Image 1 (cartoon, rainbow, N blue to C red):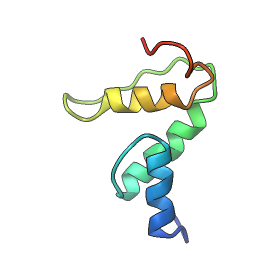
Image 2 (cartoon, one colour):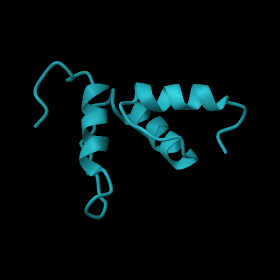
Image 3 (spheres, rainbow, N blue to C red):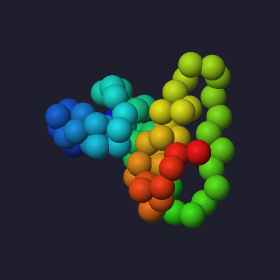
Image 4 (tube, helix red, strand yellow):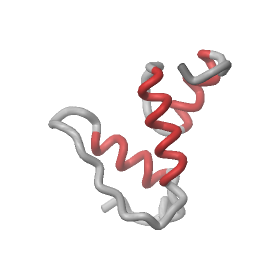
Length: 72
């Protein structure tokens, strides 16, 4: 569990990460996205078909320093 954060604050944080849902796993993923997005690290997003890899990649891009550039 993510500690003492209110469910509405958790939902808002997830929404601010351009993701949807309220699960603790989604919240944890969003925290990771916020950690890596401002870096210049090269990332490989892995997962099975239909798991939302492109959604994660787009969220990282939107929160990155390159957000004004194209998503490639």
